[in-house]
Amino acid sequence: MRAWGARLVDTVRGGAIGVAEIIPGVSGGTIALLVGIYDTLISSAAVMVRAALALFRPSKRSRDWPALRALPWFRLALIAAGMLVAIVAAAAVIEPLIDQFPELTRAFFAGLIVASLAVPIRMVGEPFGLSRIVLVLAVGAGVFLVLGFAPLNQVDPQPWMIISSAALAVCALVLPGVSGSFLLLSLGLYQPTLAAVNDRDFGYLGLFIAGALLGLGSFVVLLQWLLQRARALTLTVMTGLLLGSLRALWPWQTDERVLLTPVIDQLVPALLWAALGVVIVVALMVLERRPAAQHKR
Image (cartoon, rainbow, N blue to C red; front, side, top):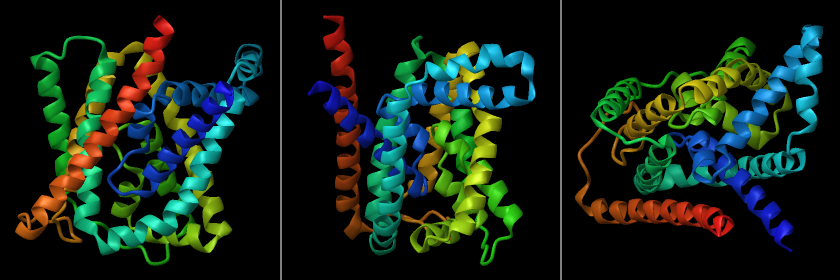
């Protein structure tokens, strides 16, 4: 019974990541951190990439291919299935919510991100002193400035643009604080990609998947190396990325990302929705820590 419960939880975890990938400003990597499967996804992806590269390096096959058998394939399949179902469902549901209630939706997402700042800070495992705080603020300020650029507009994107944009956006799946959907929005590919999912445009989606695999293969090994060699520094930078990404989730802003002052009538509801986001994340962190505590007993 417990095994089935664990499988259901992994599917839900994948679904949460899939939903995050649809929402501009929310990082799938952040949700992976939050639900406790970030290291599993990164290490598994790195093994797959190395095994694929070993096809062109026969001397490495005896080392890299056996590692494939040790991967938790069934668990990864459940996570992937949850992601796929959630992406298709969220594409049809979330877009109308963002259109009809943009301020409250962004406030809720902002609450999720604010509470999620505790995740990489907790994973650093070292005192968060002044130098780390300065680095977080510097990275956050840089992201804040970059996210202020007005988005492009791609009506009929070329294949090379789809592939390159997907390669860039997929980095958000493994890099907390960076939103893949927000990158697509900046490049003018968000609406075409959302439409391709809803319309089942498999030509477009095939190019997008090819670009995503290319980007994943290029980036994930580097990120795993950084987490192994400079984990505390990498997680500190991730915290700054999360902090800066809040710029995209300020409830009151124009389509060109010009920040506006709060609307008085919407202020209290926005704060309540942001608080709900914080409560949800805190509850998830508490639930995530309970199994570990029980295991120690």
